[in-house]
Structures are given as C-alpha cells and as structure tokens.
Amino acid sequence: MAGSPVQVTGTVLTTRRVDAYHALTVVAPGIADRFRPGHFVTVAVGGRNSSMLTRRAFTIHDVKPDYGGTVELVFAVRGPGTAWLADLRARDTLDMVGPLGRPFPLPRDPCTCVLVGDEHGAAPLFALGDALQQRGCRIDFVLGASSADRVFGALRARRMGETTTLTTEDGSLGMRGTVTDVLPGVIADARADVVYACGPMETLRGVTAVAVEFDIPVQVAVEESMACGIGVCMTCVVPVIGDDGVTRMVRACTEGPVFRGERVRFDDVGTIPFDALGAPGGRHA
Amino acid sequence: MTADLRTYLAHVELPNPVLTASGCGGTGRELAQFSDVHRLGAFVTRSITMAPRAGRPTPRMAETPSGLLNAVGLQGPGVEAFLERELPWLAERGARTVVSIGGGTVAEYTALARRLAGAEGITAVEINLSCPNVEDRGRVFARDGSAAAEVVASVRAATPYEVPVIAKLSPDVADIVAVARACVDGGADALAMINTPVGMSIDVDTMRPALAAGTGGLSGPAIRPLAVRCVWQVHAALPGVPIVGMGGVTTGRDALELVLAGACAVAVGTALFHDPYACPRVLRELEELLEERGFDRLADAVGLAHRPAGAQPLSRSDLEESSL
Ligand SMILES: Cc1cc2nc3c(=O)[nH]c(=O)nc-3n(C[C@H](O)[C@H](O)[C@H](O)COP(=O)(O)OP(=O)(O)OC[C@H]3O[C@@H](n4cnc5c(N)ncnc54)[C@H](O)[C@@H]3O)c2cc1C
Ligand SMILES: Cc1cc2nc3c(=O)[nH]c(=O)nc-3n(C[C@H](O)[C@H](O)[C@H](O)COP(=O)(O)O)c2cc1C
Ligand code: FES
Image (tube, rainbow over the protein chains, first blue to last red):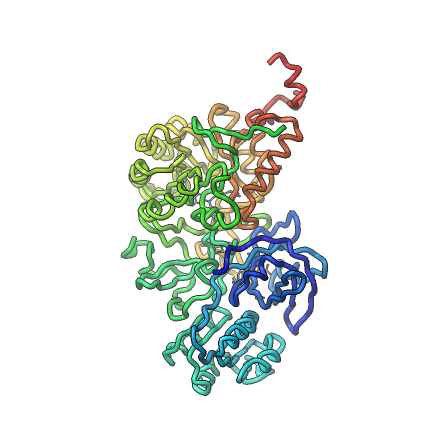
C-alpha cells in the first residue's frame, strides 16, 4: 500500500450526470497522490451536525493532476447519504478519507486480462485498465447492469478494450442476461490469463465460479456494508480462507476490498461458517 | 494559561481525559495512521475474550437517526494472540492501555484477569459486564448487581494491586446506582458508563430486522442524554468514585457535558467511525471550552453541574477572591 490514508476537506470541482449515475470530481491532493486502482474513499454525508454517523464508501473512479490532484467518484442514489451527495454543487466541500483498502494487484509480466464490472462496479476498472495497459497487458471488458442507463463506461471501454461485451437484464443494451452469462465466451476468445471483477456479491460469486472453471486467477473487489472504512468497527467482515487454509472473518475495508475470488466463501457471506476461526462451538473455538 | 487536563483513574494518572471507547479503536494500529496513540489519555482495547471469536454474522450494523446499531459480537483473536501481537505494539508506542475483558462466566473473567496479570504495559483493566452470563440463561451480568459484583471481586483479586479495575455498566437496568454500588462494593476502583443500550431496526423493504442478529447495541449522539443521566445519578450517589463517561461524545462540548455530570474522563466511540481524528479534536475543543470558562484544572469541572441551583458558576476570578 502506498502510504497511509489522510483525511481532507475536499472542494467539489465539478458534478455531472452520466445516465443513471452522478459523477463528482473533488480536489483532494493528498488522496490523489497515493491512489492505486482499486482504492476507495469514504465521505462524511449530511454536513456539519449530520445525523448520519457512518461514512459512505466509494471506489475511486479516476484521479487527475489538476489543482494539485483531483479524485472522481461515480455513484447511484440509493438512500439519504447518496441523495445528499447528489445535491452537492461546485465549490461545496466534502470531508473525505482515503485512499483506503488493498488495491488490485497487477501482474508482473504482460498478459491478457478480462475486466468485469456490474452496475457501478465498472467505476474502478478504467484506472485499472490504464495501469494494465502500461504494463503491456491486453484488456477486454465485460460490463453489465439491469438496464442500458445503468451500464457505466461503455464508450470508454470500447476505446480502451481489445473487445467490449455489454449485457443488460432487460436486453436494452448488448446481450440480454448477466455478465456471468457471457464471461466464459469472452475468456475463451481472448485466451485470458486473469479476471478482475467488481460488483455485487452475487455477481462476484458467479464470476469466480467461471474463472475457477477456466483455472485462471480472479481478483474481486467486494462491497460489504461499512461504517468506518478504516478497520476499527468490525462491521464489514466476510469469510475468507487464509494462506494457512483457515477461514477467518476478515475486514473488507482493510484486508480487502480486493481479494482472490477463490478465497472468498461467497456461499457463506452473511453467516459465520462453522469452521471459521472462533466460530461458536467450532473446532478452533 | 492552559488548563491542567490531568486526571486520575484511582491512583493512576492520565495526562488527559480523552480515551477511546472499547471496541471502537481497533487494535490501535488503524488509528495510529491518523494520530499517535500515546497522545490519548488511554487506549481502551476491544473486549478481549479467552478464545478467538468470529463474532456475529453480517449485516452487523444499521444506521439510525444520530445513532448506530451494532451487533459485532466481540470478534477478536483471543487473549493469547492479543498478548502476543497487540499489547506489545501498544506498549512500544508508549500508549497507556486499558484492557477490556469479556466472558461468559465468572471463571472466564477471572482466568482472563490472571492471564493478563503478568503482562507488561497494562494501565488498567476494564470489565465489560454487558456479556451474557451462560450460567444464568444468558442474562447480562450488568443487569444483575450481585452477578456483576461477583465478577468484579474475582477480577480485582486476580489483578495486581497497582492496576485499577474499572467496571463498565449498561444503561439497560432499572437502577443503575444499585449496580454501580454493588460493583464498587465488589472492589471496582472506577466505573465506566454507558455501554450500548439494546435496540432494533427493521428494514421496511425486506420487512426483516436490519441486523442479522436481530437486536444490537445503540451508540452515538442518540444515546447521549441517557449517558448524561447515568453519569449524573451515579456521581450523585458515589461522588468519590472516578467515572469514565461515554455515549455519543463527538465534540468537546459533549465531553464537557459528561464531565459536568460527574465524569473525570470521557471515551469516544462511534465518533471515531465518522472522524478518525475525533480524540485529539475532542481534547482540543474540551481544553478550549474549559479555558473559556475560566477553569485552571479539569478536576474543578468534574461534577460541577451538581452544585445547587442559583450558585454562581465557578470562574477564575471567584477562585482568586476566595479565601482558598
Ligand atoms: C468499498 C466500497 C466501494 C463502493 N463504491 C461505490 C461506487 O463506486 N459507487 C456507488 O454508487 N456505490 C458504491 N458503494 C456503495 C455505497 O457505499 C452505498 O451505495 C452507500 O453507502 C449508500 O449510502 P446511502 O446513505 O445512500 O444508503 P443507505 O442504504 O441509506 O445507507 C445506510 C447505511 O448502509 C451503508 N450501506 C448501504 N449500502 C451499502 C453498500 N452497498 N456498501 C456499503 N455500505 C452500504 C451505508 O454506508 C450507511 O451506513 C461502495 C461500497 C463499498 C463498501
Ligand atoms: C462497533 C462497536 C463495538 C463495540 N465493542 C465494545 C466492546 O467490545 N466492549 C465494550 O465494552 N463496549 C463496546 N462497545 C460500546 C462502546 O465502548 C461504548 O460504550 C458505546 O458505543 C457508547 O459510546 P459512543 O456513543 O461514543 O460509541 C462497542 C460499540 C460499538 C459501536
Ligand atoms: S468498515 Fe469498519 S472495520 Fe471495515
């Protein structure tokens, strides 16, 4: 990890709508400097004396050197916190902590990578794609969502990727179905060496199953409900198998959000597997 | 003129009164990325248990108005790993460490206290009494004065005399003063309050409880009036007993409120999730507020709200004119 996170009071530079999403560019030099693809930030929502105590986590979509360093977030309105964010205007301030989490590991040698993004999960993939291309990797995109207006970054993917495959559940754009449905074909055609994926747990479970089928490594960025983002509250845990073969409830915010897909026990998310370290009545208890 | 912020937990001096709340500061390493742990009045660990614990399933948290419901379930590595990996790190950084302990039986609390007894770098032991007593059908120790007193007495007996033992109380009781008194009679050198009252939230979309565990502990500013009331009542009844006040402290003003109610130290919990710099900020703000009000010493503000109505607020000029 490139240095420790910082808390900054960023100034909103621009806001824009991208189909179903809002994009927010914030001047936050300390965070932009340390950014690696896969990092996320947390923001305080609701202003001073807010009644919303937990910070909201967002992947960093992009950083630029302008004004000493800017950070761009892409988000969909979901509840009161994201609704507040969507009302921000240029020159408003935003309390931001980052960069946080374990970024995507990059391959040492050039190889072929499939980048899978479901809904806003596409947000971190373009910075990742840039980093991979700088290392001489070939990249292919698979982007999906429930409907066309929720597929993020299709144009940019078409410009960057060797191939781009789009899916929507309602068939309004690309193939009808999910990213998982088309992934085997994309991996086979590209002769992919590695898969990177970001999206809801259910998608990551499906993507991991496909990669395992092809016997290629898969790096997934998980999204678990977070209160602090810095590793102190223990609310964001997922069951992950360690190098020693032992399953632990690990913090998605600090040990993740990027994990090797086959290490995440997707079927057991939302439970404490009986064989996890410290499980009630378990063998390690 | 800067106010003297030193405070005492029994005979142990702390350079300032702002602590982390148990379970809210991680291992210390996470907060150290933002500010030095040795600058805290003390670092309070999450509640350490004998064996490793995986905790509760997710979702473990739900946000409520000015509050947070959590059901983490004391996830932790167990006392051996704590002594091997976490305590030495804190000691190296010069942090004053208050080790919180949690157990399901009196014997387990006692065994924990014994295991900690030899370890270097423990400033105080805090007993988290909000744990279900497995020998009493899961009734929480903190709800039963005699069970709480029994835990306190056996932990006190197993802990070196120079290490103060703090009993942490729950507000979910009919008479918090009775439980506080039982703990002090059992040998507690200080009290901490409040732990989280039990609450619940239901997701109206899924039409299911928002937390996997169903219920959870409520924290944050939503519970501050409850904390102020508990500290007030206990300080009134037991004015000589040091109290670590907590519950919704997010600013120096909130800390001062608890101090005026009778706390000689305050702990910051949920606010750390919102602001990783909360502890040094609360301390700075508290110091400013004390100075603005003419206090030379934090100690002079402790419990001051208990003075009779109509009495003049204490100010520096009053002190200078007084015959004291
Ligand atoms: C590492 C990470 C990266 C993320 N990146 C993005 C992104 O790039 N774009 C985007 O649109 N969304 C992203 N999310 C999801 C985003 O954090 C939630 O949509 C947001 O917190 C919802 O807040 P709210 O107040 O609008 O909704 P509410 O549902 O009212 O939120 C209530 C509480 O639940 C938490 N919460 C709710 N949903 C989620 C969720 N899916 N993940 C984490 N916490 C949640 C909130 O933090 C808050 O504490 C990311 C989440 C994580 C963990
Ligand atoms: C996520 C979380 C975990 C906690 N874990 C513990 C714990 O392990 N032991 C304990 O005694 N109290 C624990 N608490 C309670 C706090 O120490 C504190 O008493 C309470 O949250 C009120 O303070 P606050 O409003 O400042 O958070 C926890 C609270 C939270 C929010
Ligand atoms: S979000 Fe608090 S520990 Fe991960």
